[in-house]
Amino acid sequence: MRLINVNAFLDFENERLTRHTTLLVDIYGADLAVIEYAILSHCWGAPAEEVQFKEMQGLARMGKAKRKKLRERIGYQKILKSCEQAFKDKLDWVWVDTCCINKESSAELSEAINSMFRWYESSKRCYAYLHDISDSAFPSEEDQETFGQFNGWPKWFTRGWTLQELIAPRDIQFFNRTWDCIGDKKGLASTLTKVTRVPEAILKEGLSSARPSVAQIMSWAADRKTTREEDRAYSLLGLLGVYMPMLYGEAKNAFQRLQLETIRKSNDHSIFAWDHSGDIGRIGSVLADDPSFFRDCQDIDKLDPDEFISRLQIEPLFTEKEMRKVSPKRFLTFSVTNGGIEISLPVAPYCGTPSILRAWLACSCYYHATPMTIDLAASKSNYYRYFGVVDGIARPLLTMDSSFVASFPVR
Image 1: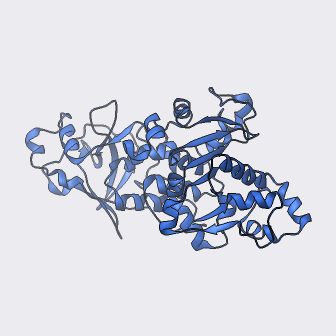
Image 2 (image 1 turned 90 degrees about the horizontal axis):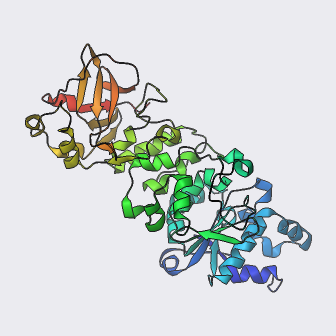
Image 3 (image 1 turned 135 degrees about the horizontal axis):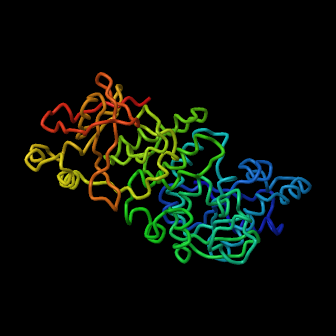
């Protein structure tokens, strides 16, 4: 991790240091574990307004005229104000994404993106700069007049990367345009929940305090935007606890890869529960195209296998006698193969339409006891997500062992 030396930067700003001053320092391993640092969360401005790594690296050797011009940039002021605030907070180090990552190195960029959640989580304090708030107080209600193009709230709440930057840090201080503190995460938790749909308990206690389902996490990102399409997926890596290389240029395939990596490490069926209300109605892969497919999934909880078996018996289709034949272990794992996703599910064909099946998932809406279902269309040995109208009643095939095994092509 590369950090800005706060004292060195402020001394340089006040022209008290020489051209040999080192403003950026690489810190790793055990040293990083004991260092306390502040971290900036903000919305990027125009690229020409931000200070990049090479500019920061060469700042101490920069000529006065060029340095004066650099200081006029909005991005430089964000770095300066972050350092000044860190100095007040008795913190010696600051991390700012614009200038602390060498984005010309694909390896360094990939490492940084995969480490981002952990870096924010390990920070002593996060400074969230809300550049479009002029008032001295955090907005308590939607303001369409001021923030109309951002759903009535500051732009910071609409960006993809700032979701993990909101959840990961233990301590966030929010600042307005003039860098006046207008609140902190714990004190504003109820308002932040209203804005973001992230539960108040997670904002106060962290992600591990009440591990949400995959579908819930995806739902929080449903309406957030990123400059690069791939970043809609990459910005969720830390929240889902997965790692994968960055391949800019892959477009929406990045979100498909994210889902496959999540499946490889998780047995959370809620990843298949997107668009359970049928609003999108896309027939095809069981994988979603992007986070917006999970927009209505904020109330979905995952079920452990024993609870899943127990709740299936609420359905009149499943008798206790039939369910005793089923081992909960069947639902503990599913895997990604070269043929697609292989998963064990209870399925039931519709009367008169045997190629269309209802499948029960080990997840439920918190206000419903019964497990969630999705419809699948069978084609030979493969199954696809189906949203058409089906006549007839689904009749279970729980006594047929093969009915539990579904292969989902990923495209």
